[in-house]
Amino acid sequence: MRQRDEALTSNDLSICDEILKDVAQRHLINDQNDRTHLAAIVIEIYRQGVRDPEQLSLLADASCEAMLEMRRLDPSGTPAAL
Image: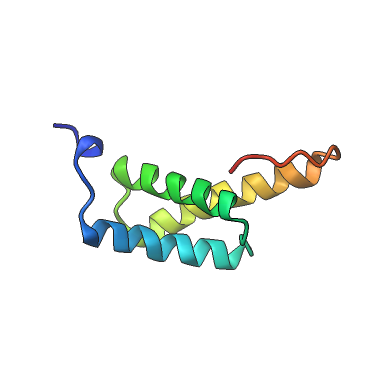
């Protein structure tokens, strides 16, 4: 079984939740859809084998920054997905 196919433990989810809260707070992400999308990104990165919280946070942070930049560049007001 591949690592990404294994079920996440409560410890795994706690790590991902802490990263999600930290990144969402740092980028002022309050919209529930954006938080859900960010949670999916954090879990996907974690499932791909990035288990170090600092590295996981950096990658999730980069995803948020890219999303926010795309929103600033899109004058139509259409929200860019995380």
